Image (cartoon, rainbow, N blue to C red; front, side, top):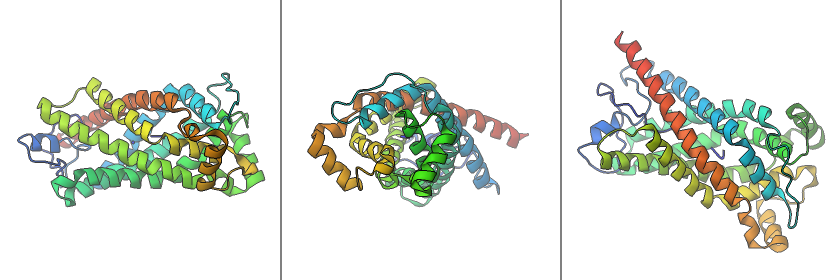
Length: 318
């Protein structure tokens, strides 16, 4: 997820939104009015509407990215899982896609169902110059809550990507039979170690870039601009968290063999046996995957939010 909410690209002057800018500006009201999914704050159903729209936008964006870029993710996983001198298999690059989508949909929806309401609440209570804190905290909290679904999904996906199982149902059944239910959460600590900073940084960078871009352009962003900022935020965050992703992958795919006894032991063993550079394995496909994925993800996310906001506004006016 290794992936994500963000600002609506439609300005609705009638919508009262929380303060989101980290600095004063004549454009503040315009940007604040489209800083989140458009709903009226005096609406008694505000929270439920935000939650509903966040679930839809997050789930749709997550599924689109996973389906479009799954082969790159598979290559990244196989490169990271290979020991020194290990051969990379280039066949079956879509192994585990179906089962992964089944998990990605609720996981992505859950992430944004937590992220967006949390972000809006924090932006409302925090000073303007702490907007980045609101984005960081909301991203980390969304990642923590959604990990309940994301970790089992990731375990099954990566075991299938590395050729350990032929189907998702077989993977779930055999993992539980051999490792117990806890096997579905293998590498949970390393997953949080990677995904909490990743989610927090990616969404904070994207949100802050979007605010600054709007101020500079003095207008709403179009779809290509949203995609460009999403790609940049994803690529930068992907580079910074690559070592954490390598550790997470090794712990998740090891199965019952327990070659690594934990995060610290995994780091020591990799450095001792393969050298420090092994912690950066798969950085190329990871950055490519998350960079392109970020452009698609945030592009789909913003467009879906715009459509839902327009429908919500029309429904309210009628």
